[in-house]
Amino acid sequence: MRLWRLTRADETGLDGAGTSRHGGRYSPRGAPVVNFASEAGLAVLIALRYEPDPAVDYVLGWTEVDATPERIPVDGDDAIRAWVSGWLEERRSLLAAVRSQVLPEADVVLLNPLHPEADHVAPLVTRVNALLERVDGILVDVKDVTTRVSDRTERVDAAIRTTTSSVSSRVNRVLTLVHTARAAVDGFFHNGRRAERA
Image 1 (cartoon, rainbow, N blue to C red):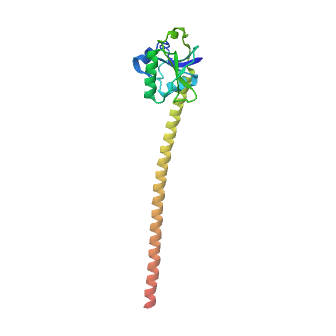
Image 2 (cartoon, rainbow, N blue to C red):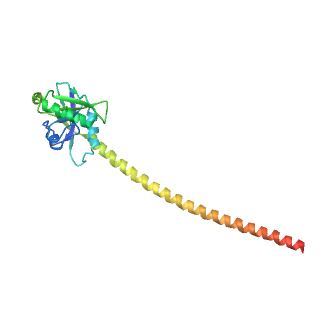
Image 3 (tube, rainbow, N blue to C red):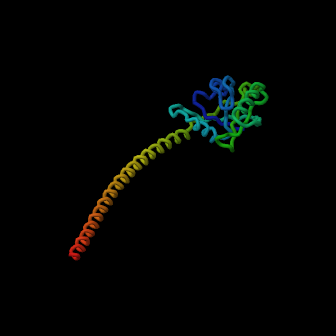
């Protein structure tokens, strides 16, 4: 089966050293394991989830492995991590698979580099991950559009505030005129009635 991995250009080895140093979602620190994806798209999605540094050179790589992954029979990160710890120590199979949380139609596939068959796994075939470069460009474009929309929204808000203030001022003037006119009319009729009584 073909397994995919998005990794730094200088970390393409399949020795599990990085995961051993830092630990992984499904493996404890100190345990070498190599994380793969069953689909290239999942490998990229996982990397994007952890916001890779755009200054770092990433490569998308794959290898062919003549083995069927053992399905991890438990759910939940802690339970999976405990299961993986035992699986790594026992070295009972080369591969183990768990359903991806990011893309449930695909699997995260773990390779035990200490398993006897690990020596037969071919090195990664890699290529520069142009997709990440495109995604980075898209994110820059989205940020630019968001900034422009934000600027326009602020201008519209300012215009609405000015218009509201202007309308309110005009309404107050009209109300003042109406009250003045009404007072004048009332005064006229009131004075007219006095004249008639006299």
